[in-house]
Length: 97
Image (cartoon, rainbow, N blue to C red; front, side, top):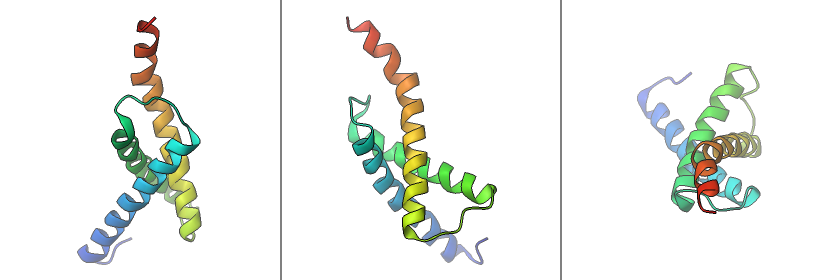
């Protein structure tokens, strides 16, 4: 996968940046009150980008251009954001009545 440490570092930094973009796009696609605000949403986007990238490479469709990478990362961010909202946000909203 990576031939040396420098290539690995660049790959991780790239996924962090793409994850931040995907988190912001996920927030635009799924607007609403998130527990934790935009910073948590961007961090969840980073997690979603890693998960999406890992899963697509695992099933063999991980290679693609920049647009494909953004799409995969955004889908991963949306899934992670939805799970986060279901776990953390669901209980708090019903208690506020």
